[in-house]
Length: 128
Image 1 (tube, rainbow, N blue to C red):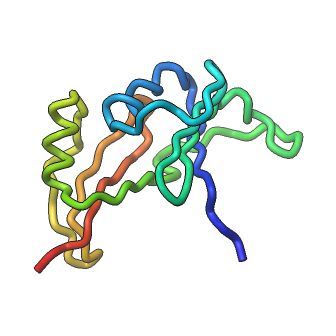
Image 2 (tube, one colour):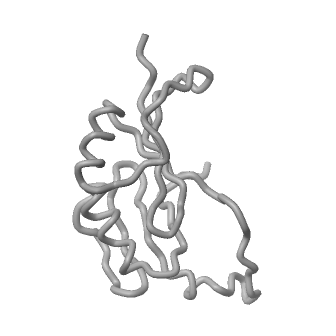
């Protein structure tokens, strides 16, 4: 059975994105730090890595073309979406819109983007 241990975001400038994840999202100091190349945060059951895109330009010895549009959605679960939204706004985080209920997903959600445009969702179970 496969076990998810890491999500690694391929970024153009990991150092520029570090303050967003460490300070604004409040993930704290990275568990692993290789400036300019890689930062890794312990986030519960899986780790989040910020990885230099240039270091992954060839995968399996083959140059990879960059795709257009969203290729991933990074999701964080919280107890209270509205409280987290207010806290992160106070930290200067800009959101795509206010929190909203998504009954089909049975979630309350809010969305934002990191400094390089990665789509991020913060969610909590929808309460009745």
